[in-house]
Length: 143
Image: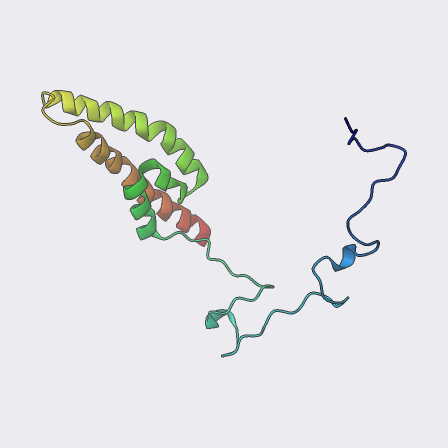
């Protein structure tokens, strides 16, 4: 049976030519190509053009989008407001909504599926949380 283990008395061989590490991407020895200039307008802050050097991001959160995510995804939607909001909501909203929803279903005599009660209870918690959390965060950024 042949032995395919590398021999330790010989140096390892490289598959690239010696000294070619600087030219991995191909081309010559020129620097990185400059990004193309905008073809229309001046390219300032109000033009809609964002260059690579000065990326401008708006840290404010959209109130409508926060509410939409809270309605669609429940506590997971609160991760849009903030990481801490999402984590706290995962561990508090679900048990609270389950307990309150099941108690309401039992109080109605069990004639209704608990899912039809638990989801609106969850919305009653997450939607105001998204509203207040987003407004609070945006106010904090204005200061």
